[in-house]
Length: 321
Length: 308
Figure (cartoon, rainbow over the protein chains, first blue to last red):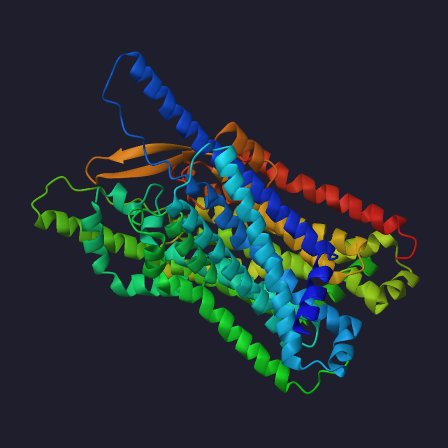
């Protein structure tokens, strides 16, 4: 029965104009960002190769080693697009899954058959997770093909694992918003109101908290960095920041409340956009960034459990809205 | 004229009776108000850090000390730019998404149309009502910001700075109204409120986030090397492509004007208001023109629709 509900969920999603519009936007953005990123990698490769040819034509035997082009950082733009467009897509999926059944009166019909409430919720979740997984795999394939075909780079095994883990994080991030949206739609008596509330929660988590954190970042206030403008070295910077421990903890605390920030932090570490993780293996990066992984997983599990409790205990389920 | 005012008053009243609208509005007002506090705290921390740096360097026997950071008073309020551009526009969408479709679904639009009121007056009434709500919200935020700015930061803005702040709020009003008008138009054209709302959210996302992000990815970066700090900093500069992409985003234009008006950019922080507005005239036109175009389309749609 769970599989049947999940299959219906997938079929319904591909009939939803809103979902299809956002999906199209996300795919276009993925293609544009990865093509632009791959071209940057290709330009860097071409520059290196032409320098080598030039040196060889001069008869130089000692050639410079190839710089670290970090081809997987071509997905950097994708982090931002998933952060915003992916989250909105997940919200639409989660909300529609529940509100359409309320609106059409089909929830009463389904539950009057031999379908337990938990089976109903599990089927919905499974269907939506399958859609999100499909989107993640599709964007993953686009990324690999573009990097190899346009960028002309051969990815190492570590690069491939890092990229796969990064796409895994993108899936977990979108899952959180689908679960949240389904949860709010389940608790709310009106689907459209639930959508508005989910959008407000999304705004707070994805814009407001990171924005407050950014503003409280002293180093962010001057273009090029405050400490750099003061001529401070990294050690001196850390020394000064020690005196602002409470302030920095508060700032970090605000940022930690945002799943978007957790997703951004672990993704930038995996993609080597944030310096300091180049020598680590992909699994070591995940280990070092476990708190961010927990920040993506724990809220989804907590919200899903609350949704279960609310849905299983709800008495006015057969009431029309 | 009476009909327009009556409709506008009804629009404003029903907005303030809607719990969800009050929630997003409360968030917007709260954030805008606390932005003064966050801005002032950060600037104070920055000054404190500067003094600590000077002490540290002196203790190391260094005689060449860095000059103190220049803090322009209005830059304390720079958070407002993001809040208006991101949350303010969403407030306008929340305000307008049921302006016609909601009335249509409740059957009240037909009732209004049976009264002696022209269809263009219905649009004007809704527009005036939305303007009253957005205007009063921004008015409250302006007063709170001005008072808190003086109390918390301990700085007193001069006439030129007050004029800059007023101009910023005026442009913020126009910017939010553009979103309100666009949402009103979508609401006129669709029966499904939720669909109209999400459609506007996609447009908002594209204008406020995707286009500026794409433009950002097309900027070229120069690397500034600090020998003393032994750090390399990326300094972005516009390219033809990044400028072209930004042309399609009123949000990018609003942020650029806002940064100039609130003294975020040191190079334009001392220019007089007239010179500043003249410099940003292109951006201002780019915000106003789409709004006017959609407003005309709204009037046309309301006039031509057979069953409103």
